[in-house]
Structure formats: C-alpha cells, structure tokens
Amino acid sequence: MKKDIDDYLNEGIYGIKETKATERKEYLGTLRERTILALTEGEVVQQKGLKQLEEAMKSHPDACLRFSGEVTMRFFKPYKTLASSRHIPYTSVTNQGADVDIALVLHVDHAIDKPDIFLPEEKEKATEITEKPEHSLTSALKNIFKR
Image (cartoon, rainbow, N blue to C red; front, side, top):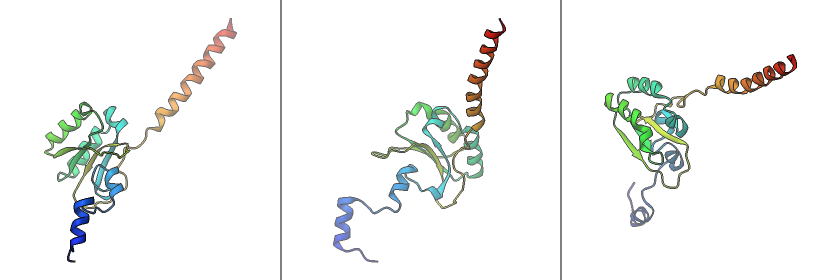
C-alpha cells in the first residue's frame, strides 16, 4: 500500500497510527498478549512478586522489563537487581495522561497469550483480619462477665 501526501501530513500532525493504543497505555507500551507478568503499584511498593518474576525470567531469557515512571524509582531497586543478574534489559516508561495501576511488566516481543499474568490474591490474610477483632472482642466480654 502506497502512502499519499495526506498520510504523511496526518502522521506529522497526529503521530504514527498505533494498534490497540489504550491497551498499550495500560501495559506500559506493550500488549497484553505479549505480557508474561504484570505487577501493580501496590505489589511493587510492598516488594511482592520477586520470586515469580525470577521464575518468569528463567523461563523467558529473551524478555524485557518495563517500569512505570509514575512510581518512585527506589521501589524498583530489587527488581532492577534481579533483571541485571539475569541479563534482562529494563526501561522506565512514562505514560502521560494514563491512569493505570500496573507498575511493572515483563514482556516478550511476540504474542504468547499467557492466561494468568497477575499475582494470585491472598484471600487467607483478609479472612484472618476479619476474624481476629471478633475473637478479641468475644474474649474481652467473657473476661468481664467472669468477675
């Protein structure tokens, strides 16, 4: 397909057309189908997912790592150290105007369509938190009525 003068002018004004632009913003410039592992901002701040990231890097030595420029870089230090030890290139991506929760993406340059790219949620901790206050209240009431 040959480009005409209008195509060149539109590219100059609006930039090169990009497929799945909203998906690329969400996954820090890459596509969901190329993503191996994605960590949210909360997970990165709490230093979660390092073991899963290392396993994914072992399985995909051709992968690349992207960090969100919206998160303070000090939180990425252990992830950068891990990437360097595995010879995985990494870069920081700033998504101006994109409101996304993803802070780290390990990806390849071809489609792999991995079904689970996020860390599994920890449900047992949430139930422990709700049970402990009830238990302590019950024991406190029992102690009051024993006297």
